[in-house]
Image 1 (cartoon, one colour):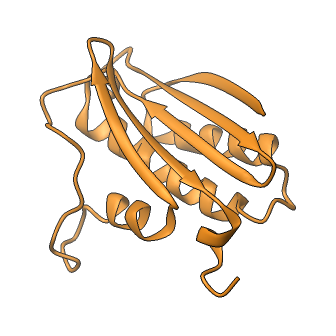
Image 2 (image 1 turned 45 degrees about the vertical axis):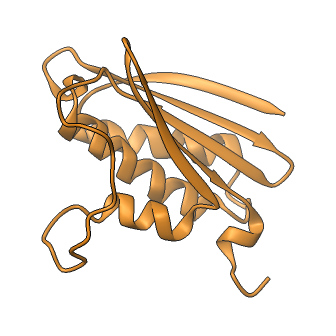
Image 3 (image 1 turned 180 degrees about the vertical axis):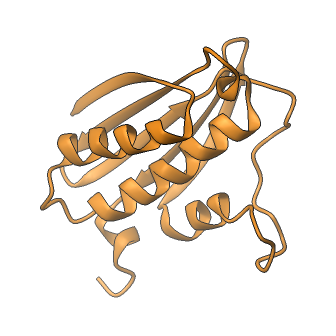
Length: 133
């Protein structure tokens, strides 16, 4: 298993750097790289929108772990009063589709909270990337 964690400023434009981390660690030819980048972007955006990470000086940690072709990514924010992450029921709402995508594409996902903040994790496997495989 290989794993790496990097800390990013809590700014929307830093989602690009988080995606680059995922692509660099997985490799452009990895069968799950596109899904991993998309979901990392969605969860990163939620972290800065719904937590103290989006305030001036805020930070977001991104951890990427691989074992074979399986991928586990964790995004940790600095906490806030937004409540537990949940999938919105209204698919036609203007926002709130990030966790819907996570729920649809990931082989599993969840979250944990502690004094430091909230960590949203997701797991991708080749079977979750291609339902016909």
